[in-house]
Length: 164
Image 1 (tube, rainbow, N blue to C red):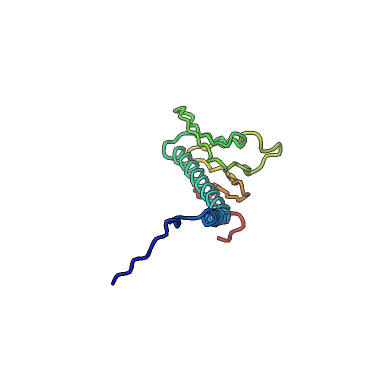
Image 2 (image 1 turned 90 degrees about the horizontal axis):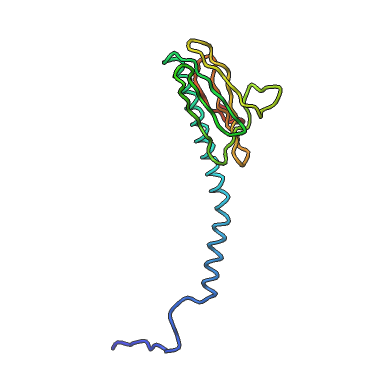
């Protein structure tokens, strides 16, 4: 005795417009809540990646000066958001453009006439490494400092406000 449910020809399977609007409203609410957190995470990743690239760039310049016994000029251009490295003897030049959303905020030691001018640092083979600190900032104001330790000659990345 199997009972079959009668189907009314007027009833149709499907989703009503009100149900669809509720689902769309819930999805847009979730996206609105999570998007700022995702954006902040992406900005932080870009800043960290840019800081790593700047440290690697400085390390390559230091290695070229010491291992190849060549004078190397590092130019930091805050307005163009770029670093350049030029070996004097071979006329080899390399440039590093920073990621979108990350900018060079300052170069230390600061000059009295402002930060708009390109800064040049000369690395001499066997010479003392100049004190270089490049401050990077993202859109949200988070900072990273990439500096070269003048004693060891090793680039390091610091986040201001964090304990070591």
